Length: 171
Image (tube, rainbow, N blue to C red; front, side):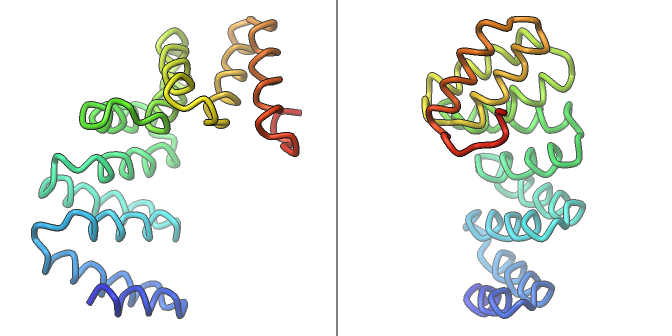
C-alpha cells in the first residue's frame, strides 16, 4: 500500500496517494514513520488542516514520536498559531533535546509572541547545536534588530552571509 501511495503521488495523483498512504499507516499499527510520511505530504501539498488532524490522531497513537510533534508544530507555525506551535516544539524537544531545527522554530514562535529573552535563548542554543543552521542565525539577527542590539545583529548577519554568500534574505 505504501509503495502504491508513493507511486500515485509521483504521478501527481496526490489525493489518491494520500489515501493509500493513510491506509498503509493504519495497517501498520507499530510504524509511526508512515504517519510522519503522510504528515509531510499533507504539509508539502499545503493541506494544513488535514495535516494537523491526521498528525493529531497519529500523536495519540505514537506520543513518543518526535517527528510527529515536529510536523504538527510546523503546520501550526505556518498557520501563525504561535502558542500551539511552541507547545508542539517544546514537546518534541523533550523527546529530542539536541534538535537544532526544532529549537530554532521554537525561538521563532517565541519571538512572534514577544517573548524575546526566551527566543534569544532558543536561537543561541540552536546555533550552538548546529553552527551551520543559517535560518536560526537569520531569525536571531532579526530579533536582535527588533530588540535594538544593532552590533550583535550585524555580527550575526555577517556570519549568516559567510555561510550563505548568495542569499538575498539578509540584504
